[in-house]
Amino acid sequence: MNTLNQDGVLDRTEREPFDSADREIILAVNDPEQLDYVDALPMTDEEQDAKFSQVAGVSVFSSEGTTEAIYSAAGAVIRGSDLVVEEYYETAFAIIRPPGHHAHKISEGFCFLNNVAIATQHVVDHHHIERALVVDFDVHHGNGTQELFYGSKQVLFFSTHRRDLSYPASKSSVNDIGDGVGLGYNINVPLKKGFNDVDMLYVCDQLLGPVATAFKPEVVFVSAGYDAGEGETIGGCNVSAKGFGTIVRKLLPLSGGKMVLALEGGCNLVHLPICVSHTIRAILGDEDAFLQDSDYRDKLPFKSTIRTVNTIKHNLRLCWDVFKEKPSVILNNSAVPIFVNVFFLGQVLRPKLLFLLVV
Image 1 (cartoon, rainbow, N blue to C red):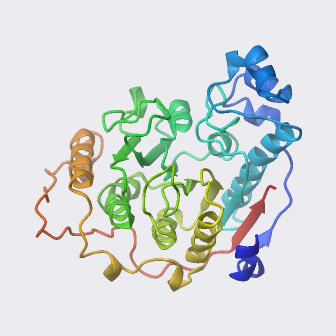
Image 2: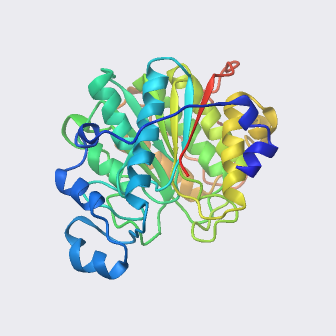
């Protein structure tokens, strides 16, 4: 909060009240047993191991007040999605704990309820949204969100993540592209350890931009995890605060600015607030909070990133017309990739930004 205040973010955004998430809305995504677990969270790890293992996976911890925080976090994202879809605001950012993108039918990975998935299903059910895009740039795969929407064509799920992390053990490869009517609506981009701004923006311009433009989302949700950022020792990657700002800036035009962000990962308490501040300021149009094309367009991503992108294009060629052409292969160090920038055209209007907070 000190960083947001020092950067002038708090003076330029509105904060709205919100309620704890309604059980009926949560139950559209979660089973009743999952809510029973949340309602009776133990106070110690020993109690959790003894009593609640059937609805909990790895790395979930609780103490006094955890249950309230869980419902508040989900409620903040739901409230933000209501206000954005109903056009009170163009963009909302819920700065919340606990995160949610690993939760599905069980709680795991510090996540109890999948905040973004609950809000996404809510706008589909209650606001009759037919096309919602969920972008997850956390360094860990958004396995919970993928699990919940794997067979849906109303929700396009796009996850970039580090490919060699032991957690989560999930279907996170380039070949996991959805099932049934949802075939082609699940896109995983596993990247090499150490990936940086250039890799992420190459993925955005070559993959996310074309498919999302074809999808024409009515609203964009962002699982904003910053543990792929510089200084995050667990993530081991090098995306800058400006890099995150650029990614989010690129997403704005896709749905006319209608975007809901929710905080996911990020453990470096020095770097995390800087990233959040840059993200918000990029949305507001501050040019020092995001990269210009000239900052990265002549730089090469990892060769493995280029191969991964080409493989994904090949896998999706029968699902999306934009990938029917054979992808170009750029592998030598002298080649310069062409960044398409298909969804970074023109001036993005400064949105009315809502600011939701859970502490």
